[in-house]
Length: 510
Image 1 (cartoon, rainbow, N blue to C red):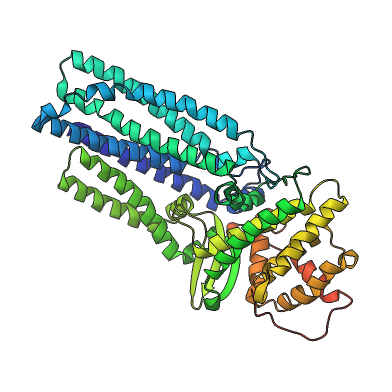
Image 2 (image 1 turned 90 degrees about the horizontal axis):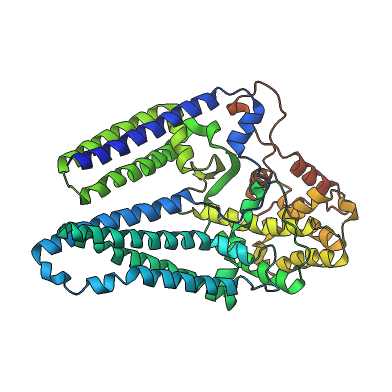
């Protein structure tokens, strides 16, 4: 009972420390006057490296270790209970359980041979990524480390049980020894996943090898464009582009466009007083996780009075966090990103942003759109501006035009042409193919600044560029605004183009 209360106390104190850090940090940020620091805080930090996936996913690893701990506590309690009721059931099992550590080690060594063979795979359609990027996306390295951890843990249990057997602690001996069964199950779960992913990549299963392209949008956060001049070819470009377009069109259909009245991209801190629903969700998710962690300990010593007491305490703490602004900001920041899309659905404004929960339909759509934008941006920023590169750039536009059924790709084509404008703003010198799209699509969709197409384009450009107002001292968070001067220049150039038609039309497609 004492140990149980001690663990609950550690969780509670750790929670208080985290909330104190949130309060102190966000209180200081709210009083910040340096515009450079405000930019970094509200709009994110520019990195100088390419990263297709998180190198160390705290959330993913927290789930692994907490699940392993919870299942170990449950199995330990169950094993001791079974031994007390029927000790004879364990007779003859020790020989097999003792073989588990060596079995795991031998399997682990064999996996390295498989991964080593797969590491040499290099295909023509591996554009913007390689086999190591695929392994990073599927967190093969993390799975390897977890398997190694389970092997070490199995050997520790093996030698620890030998000591307990000599001490005649038979109940604890059988309980702890049974944990190697759990290690066996977890290990082979990860081993099978590694083998399945590796084999799928080797036989060119696009559901695996092209998944890495789903993270291309993340690279807009980084400073440098990844440029690969050797592997690009027309066939590989179409192969990759079709995958991205399929994902984009599928995600686009899931968005309720008819209900959307307005869209903008902004920082959550400028709207913190109006984000009551988002704050409630963030606080609910945070305290739900903390309370769930406390409940896990009930496997050891269940006490309904303590559980009810903790529930009341966390409800009071959640209310306090909602009422105190720095704490409210801190918990929103712990669950949500610092910036996102404010989408007005009829009379309801919804804050659409990636969270620790599954992505919304809107975020899935935006990310799929930005993946294609970044794919194109790599092309127009490639070194050695030779004829092959120009052909690849044209191929992308032409292929999207072919798939632009009923205007489904109008917004996408408009944004691609805007990226080309960022690279070379002299529209008059563009190829006729690009001019035709400017006349046919951009004039139509960007003619009305109040149209949803225009607003979404402006919001997406805010997201991928995040240019702020002038660096003036004394600007506070509520006055920190994004601006899109280049986008406004692009719209002006469209209107000034020589063959711009006089009939004014309003965009109806996204």
